[in-house]
Length: 311
Image (cartoon, one colour):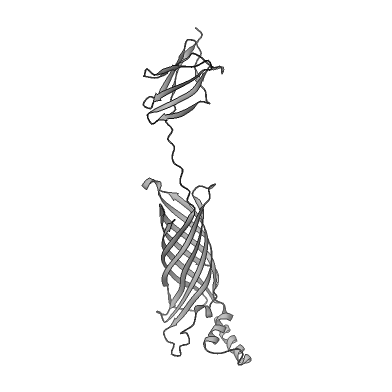
């Protein structure tokens, strides 16, 4: 009897799950030279479950999951044992969540000064809230773009609260976000990092001066002296579980909100000095104030902690 070295299970074979307890194997038996082998006996090794290949070498057999191999034999070939393709368990695809969310939290803010002397400063605080939209990038795993529109109170306290500058902004953030799934809680817990630009516009503000007998600053706004526009870089870290999140953000202001010309005009206006009254006198006073300001730079710095929910 001419014995060949092996009977080959065609690479193009397939396995389908018949039930949770068995594998339904459908494939074809071929010889080493690629010809179909009809009449071959196919047995689930260690059982009495068997079948025979048809004229085209094809067969279908149900193999209980506890059996791991098939034995294939034929009078003209050497018997061969092959592994049964294991039951294929599909892992559900991660749900891609695109949608709106809300965030509520607390913000602590201060100003970064340059060339402004030895001011004793401390931070101010307030509540922040915003609406976010998280857009998942399907082609880049775990990556998304998060946009957010926030109400953010900023400002600074100086000389043990003798002067407090409050400035309330509407801030737009556009952040690149990357998350990493933690192997706990069914992979529903993840941590994330994000970074991107922000722009903000001051909508209201106030100046509280402890020693103000004439009430000059009583109705004054921070934006009578400082620019309303702010821009910078927002950085964030957080943790997310299902639709809930805890996020830590830091706003690094890059825009100088101090304009010495605007500041000088604001100081004169608060003191009741109008340009139309005496142009030469006004210009002289303004120039005197500007000369004392030198190259001052004032930039916002804010730390936010928020809890959020995505719908």
